[in-house]
Image (cartoon, helix red, strand yellow):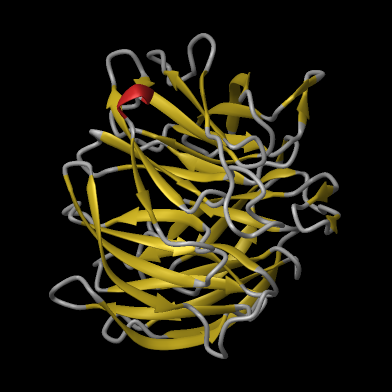
Length: 362
């Protein structure tokens, strides 16, 4: 079984109305388990899904014993907002629900835990807020959430009419949490209090990415001195230096092959296992950009290739580092690409039917 990896795929299971006005019909049933053969590059569904409403982002704890999933909803238990689910993960991959908590904001879309499993942080996209809990010894959230509300708006009247927190990420030393606010064109850094399981809102600092960038996701390298930012609205990747709560912009590169247009939006971002290459997906053009990470940690473009799916909202690199799996939200497929570990280049090998895949984790 060493050549087999287990993937959990979050899907849309209910109709959604996006900020653009688009109505989307989800075809999934919740969190779908799949087995991936890392020798053959094949994907096979493993049993019945764990049914839950719109688990649009799923994340495993560092020890792989827990899975956290958001319910991307505007209303939960009669109140505005979505929910956070915490599952215990058995050795055979089965999920058992430990808790379900209201996030205090609409359309949660991202969740992350620290390495020591002391706290969990959720981003509420439409609500423009963060929800933070300390965790008990079992890894479940304790008590009421600390809800931190962002305020303001950006330049784009459709996408930036208010704050939209799209993700929150810990710095490598976990002294800070970095919230990417697409609506405000800001990265907001909050000092972390792990003992209390809270963020120090009054001590926050702000890095402004530039107008109409729409920062979506941040990604730190292993040494923690570089941060890569996928900017949804401008379809760019930013390279930032990082030290002790401070960012400096070093480089800006396009993620597109054929030039920017309003229909294109950057989506997901990942480093290769050896951190020699960076990958960013873009929707509309439906491509994946491949960059080489140079000795100074700046990027050089290797290639921009078709993602093999429609709307590659999320993708993942398998544990072997030899395969990239791209989820096609609007094609109901997952495309498997072989990674050339010497050049970083991608070769599409197969596609597999998966209902409304919007997040993959292993």
